[in-house]
Length: 274
Image (cartoon, rainbow, N blue to C red; front, side, top):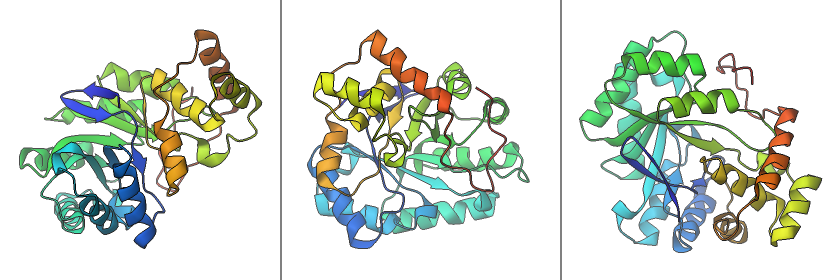
């Protein structure tokens, strides 16, 4: 496993995304992933599966400190009182005294960063989170959050895959020394049929999905693909034994021009123009 370091956080460069994984499917998926070598789990209060993620972690039976656990507070809970209630409930659900990374899941335009980011920082100061960061933040939002934060924001978690151009916000995140965590890194399976990805994959004995993950890794991002299928989990982990050439990276980069954004909930900000 490789790692991305940002402001003291040592983030495993492949994680298991768990959105939509429910009940025993989630428990088994988490345990299977940890059994095969994953050390990074991503969940959120909104996913309604923190209990199952925690159960899978305990079923695995390894050392807590060997796994990097991320959870998130939703936009409707960013006032200090609600923020603390949400986080405490997450820790209760997970049956953990702390998470390694706590994120503001989506911003709430009606709550100033001086309030929401302060609540985030307080969670780090009191030990409920080792590190803090944000998700779905634009360049302007990053600058505004950094202007008021008292703790380093270690990552910006964003939608990132070969079919979307996120250069502007990636550059802004890197300017602040933040890791970029990539959700939907294989575009929810829409990579299949991507001729360039499949052709490049064939040259390396890899799949289109593995090429997508490798592309993100070589760009310095942290992909968190979601799957409950052990064979797919293993394939997603097996992306550190090959490298894309500069020409192959450039060919995949051209696919960014599609600008296919998959995640646009009502609380989305006005996204950066590439």
